[in-house]
Image (cartoon, rainbow, N blue to C red):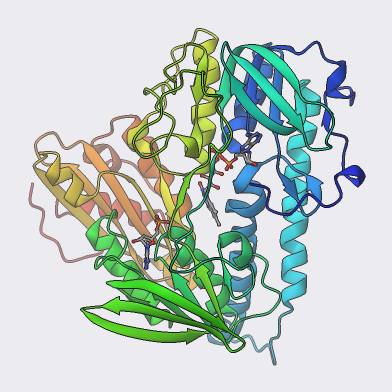
Length: 504
Ligand code: FAD
Ligand code: AMP
């Protein structure tokens, strides 16, 4: 699952290094903890374990742009490179469209994809190199190779450099091998005309027409990058409902905003086949019973990700899998084998870096005898588009389905002074609360900085806040966060900057 081929391992770093920079062969092969996979889940687990005094090894096989690399999907080909390109493309679009209103004249605004990509690559290199430094500083041994769990908490390492494999033994093992993009026969990735999310982060020029298969978080983010830079983007989504897992009000507003930006989002459009030619890719899909075809320069397949456990488990480990091929774990990430944990994208729950990280910390602290528990009810979701879309806790629909009698309140950024001053007036904050107890159940935000603002809701939920708690707090003026206050007030019909008559 390397994101580049292993072309020049000999020129890259040595096959494994510890804090002193010595080869792994020099270790005695015995560890308190062996982590397989150095993504956000695995590397945070390794660092936390080292902090707690454990002797730790982490096995990571990824080679990114010819160099062995820690940080997993997130740092190399996921969260970070996508956000770098989202930021560059947003600055370009905002310079072209937003500055005139401020009286700022720019003349011709141009951009250079190569510079954007180089900036992105430099950020990735800085962060992945930073994890290597943290490993060194914490005395963690990094085995650059492929790990395989054997029976009896032993782990076989096959080094990237082709040297002999060795077997490590551990008191505890964490499986953290993440996920990989789902491929569909209807659109086979050819790394040229048809790419997955990794390929879409490497375009050297802006495709004139771009098809995105799948309107999930990744498809919407990558579609936004290339639309802002000039691609005519069409998103084909099999489901009739847009972002079906979100609060319906939030999803409706997001769809409206993305369409307004010029993204053509086709719902109920199930891709059946693709045909690559010199002209591009012809995509055939069915929609409302009709067969339709569209032609694109390039297509990005974003139909989801699946747990990656290829070659991870020897036959006799006793590790149970779920029906969906995930490693079966309990709420504390323990597998069916004592002392073996599994975390992150490899196990149930949302495929998110922060969820993987906290599971890694929880697993390690549990081994250490602590009672750490991830609160799965307050995992934040964010779509890093503009406006951002973010949520935590229960949607209105989920709260009702769970049997809550609910009350909701919503307040728009459009009348907030700071939002007007910043020209960021799209969207709203919405709260879902329990009508009987007043307890906050969920917060849903679409707007500038939603991904940061939603943390206010996460903290409130963690502290089991009531709606009244937020209503009684003093929010600084003028800030976007005042919309959070007004949304909480509006749950009881008492927002100040809207015509509402107090209901209670
Ligand atoms: P991974 O990050 O996948 O790391 C697992 C590592 O294990 C990999 O590096 C792999 O090489 C290694 N490995 C696999 N098998 C072996 C083996 N046998 N031996 C040794 N090493 C092995 N999440 C967010 O929270 N926010 C975002 O903004 C976000 N944006 C994303 C954008 C994109 C384009 C993509 C693709 C994903 C994004 N994600 C985002 C999801 C996020 O990247 C994942 O949820 C996260 O990386 C999961 O962490 P992990 O540690 O479980 O696995
Ligand atoms: P996510 O799992 O959130 O990354 O989103 C992936 C999206 O891809 C889901 O909304 C799926 O419905 C969608 N999808 C899966 N297969 C197809 C297909 N053949 N054509 C169009 N959309 C698809």
